Image 1 (cartoon, helix red, strand yellow):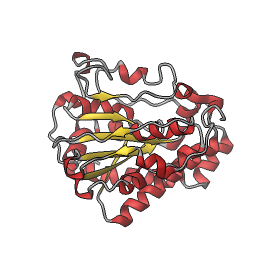
Image 2 (cartoon, rainbow, N blue to C red):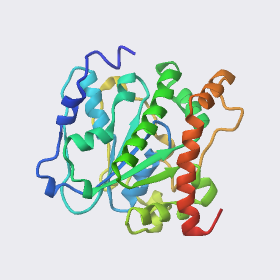
Image 3 (cartoon, rainbow, N blue to C red):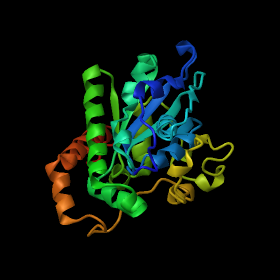
Length: 285
């Protein structure tokens, strides 16, 4: 893990590297928070295809540069069109699981009336299998548990603050279909829906390329992973993917820990909240 963090980190210093400028000019923000490998990256394409600038974990990137002993910054976009920022928790260090994007947005005095909050989740067994498949020995099961716990803690913070929270559970794409799921999501966020949000992506600029409305930061070399988003980058639309069971990399002891530590219960609460909204709008159960 030492290659990922070679210097101590002061989160307040990281927060100060997110530069808002005049808050009245800051773009409305849709902030998406999730454990890594929850299906949030594909949402960059969903929002980008809808004309909304979508940013790939720019704040965690500032944190990661700090973990490498270097300063990095991110200037908050301006304008009246909303931006979508997706931030994920994990997967390499406990510093990343301690990082709290909701704390950050409050520390920088971002106007709460411009803020819309999203929690994204995925079945924890599938999520850990994905961590294992992608990162193997580069991560640890305890970090995975801590990432889920952090997201649930952030959810409690948001609910206690009185701010509204929109849920997106990846399995909804399987159970309700891509169009109904995203149409409902956009309705909750007061955004117009077009079918290009969920299909016809081959006709769009390449994922992360000019005109795609998807923005990757320059990451520290230690964190670069080849083909990490290949499935998303080559997709023509929003689809549900899951590994078949028995899940590779998930031991019986780990499955029991996932249940015992509360991850399954938390996920089920997230799913219930999301599915209640979908059922209300579609009539489907």
